[in-house]
Length: 320
Image 1 (cartoon, one colour):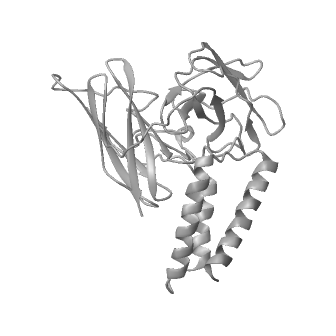
Image 2 (cartoon, one colour; image 1 turned 90 degrees about the vertical axis):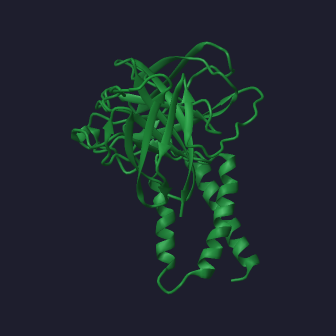
């Protein structure tokens, strides 16, 4: 097929995808991702042209279908749905964020299975990867509404993730649902450059290791403080550290916790959460993470020292 024909087929397919997304109202597709999809489609055409005898079209399609299993790209999963989020609509306005989870029967979910010492984890980040927050709202067990005091620091479009597991025999894995929320006002997106180091409140944190698409790799965080010969990481949310990994662009959500530690069945994450063998000792903690696709990833490490939780941020590139 010539280039013009490929382009026509791609435009028809793209229109169909957006038409279905509009009707279903479930997918979260940021405008920035359209450019990424276009670039990937062009690269895909080149890959097909260069495919050898050992690679088939079916294998290539299966790789793309795997993206559908990634968390944080939908407001509904397995019949559970994240309601509309209520929050201040401008920066520097103190208020409250509230939402609920609806069951497949359309009722508010009020019974949860505790995961990492909490019934629900709230993660909020702006579309450019800035303004990251990991918090734990309070549940009204009668209404099923979650609330938390809230104030936005800056304008922009934010992704709001909720990570939870229903207290139900049918719920084998935890779910990560998400919605976008717009905070009015001008803002300039932050440039997210590749970086393996961060300094937070006098703590120097380095993330060692590498990411390779489709392969499980070990990342080790090393925490140091000038003038302190010995740093001891303290337990936080039942682990020595807490790592969230987001794919730049669509903000697909991966969730990593230290392994190599005792865990029960309710600690296992679903198909989108990396929870594998890792070790922690003193000032270091390791995670096993698998990047689903090549490209840039945003990483957020929560660590606790002297009773205070801090967040170090990194940007890594996953190779092919």
